[in-house]
Image 1 (cartoon, rainbow, N blue to C red):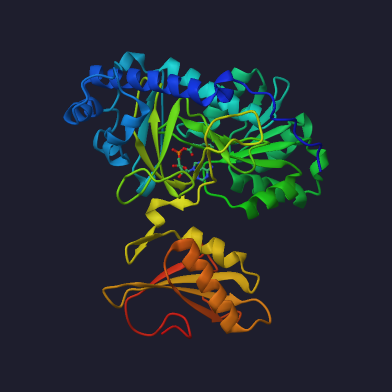
Image 2: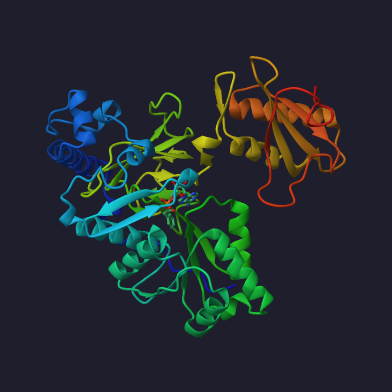
Length: 444
Ligand code: DLL
């Protein structure tokens, strides 16, 4: 194992350690400015604000946010390519974007000021991971329209660290560079971190020979099991970083060495809410909700309550470290994955957590939505892992699922090897039963 990464006691920006009152005052002032900018630009969001009776930012408080209009990806698509800019085109310094859901691209413009803010929040993320001015950052996120590569690059620049802009791919060259330059920080997607780690193992290079101490990984969903794998393969601490191009790119939120698995949201720039995905109303802290961000300081493409489709929980309890910003959980999934069973929102990832926590079942399960009647049922089918009494396990899982989901579901325990396997592509964890033979033996 490489030496542990340095402490996260150092913060890059005093905004990270503000008191709640100071931060609220700053956010309120910025919200007022944002609303005034949107009204002055008189674009889609300015008109939407006026339609809800808001003619000025003056006097608004954070408590007014829930009545302000929301923005969705559909708005960006409708005004593609750059119809939602709030500044004249000559003020746009660069354009990034994402290939997006269903292959429909989204483009985002940045002023020089937006790039400076992005660099700042990215530098905060790197410092929270223990990086310093003396760090050497091997940046294997893709450079280009995607925000990963250049986002980290800007952040490394703001920190004054050294960045190797290697971008993604050409793994053999990356292995060589890492051994020759001995970077302390690796930035890339979690799946690429595993790929690199396996390539090192295949080449017979031990983690200690890389010099790496910490990895900052995001841009795609990853589990704690993947974290363990990355940490073992590369001998590093693997931290999660979250962001999306619509809001700025990586650095909207980031885990720190001391944040206990939660991600600090840079909420002085990106005000976060968790919303019920169906009603769009805010949910209490601690409850799973769709993240929505208000870009308090963005100039080129300011967004109000932008609904990300990403699901997480918010935690305002003080963490062990110095940072006082609200923390979000690792993403638990996307709204697109959500099921609605008899009016209850069910996220497959939540079912997965309950099922996999039971020692009597193997990590092989299948959710079946029994849609043969107007009142669909959810059946959770799992493979037994050992020598347990099926009735006991079924009752225990049923109880745990009811407690977690607020819904009764049928639990079917089958013999090992009885659930269908996927050999190529992504595992299939959910099927709809519209009629005919039961998809799993024992299901009625
Ligand atoms: O993926 C920005 C980014 C680059 C984040 C590098 C972190 C590191 P987009 O291409 O616009 O931007 O995709 C944004 O990716 O809405 C999430 O669904 C997903 N995503 C981003 N970070 C995470 C993460 C970048 N840490 C979309 N865990 C978001 C899970 C993530 N999903």
